[in-house]
Length: 124
Image 1: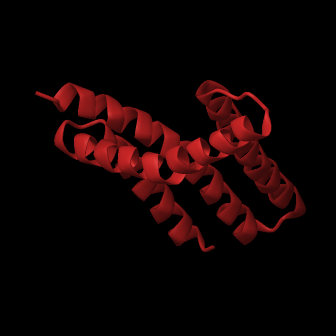
Image 2: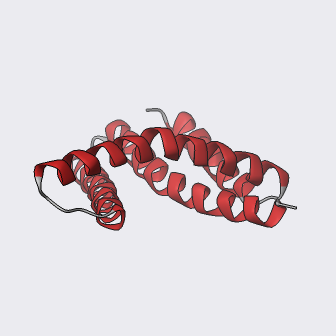
């Protein structure tokens, strides 16, 4: 990834996070995050929880949420380690790609949290 594309990517992620905190755009982004969360995390999580309960392994929604959050944190830590390793090896193009991936992994939950808060404030 070139230096210019790297900077543009980071600026666009910062704009997304900043827009997530505003009243109208944040509420719209929060609504989209809620829909995506239901379809891509809630439905598979409920199906996995149901199947585990059927097999005899009692699991609650809170436990499934903690497992998913732990996996996400491990994914972010792996991206940070990969970026650090590539910087130490001197592969700057690949390091910028890894840092962009890490920034995306950090910006998405932050944007979701800010936009869901903006959605609650904008609700009549």
